[in-house]
Length: 106
Image (cartoon, rainbow, N blue to C red; front, top):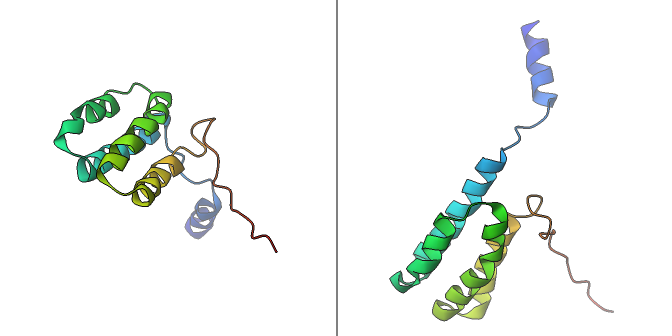
């Protein structure tokens, strides 16, 4: 009986994160990007991210994050960091979609 239950547990649904867990994961990722790649002068952005009430507020703070990153990094690096942050929103915010791959023209 024990083996059978273990087997079915393996095939069962995966753990689904709560909206609060998702929000905190995105918030913490954005904060770590700000703290690692921006100056102390960007404390206003850190404040906004820390006190954002929902995932939509964090979604719209991405433009400010991109601006702050471009002030301190080259654009390709800033875009790569923002893409990493944006990927966290896919499936959690209606405006976020999976990245589209460009097809090579023949």
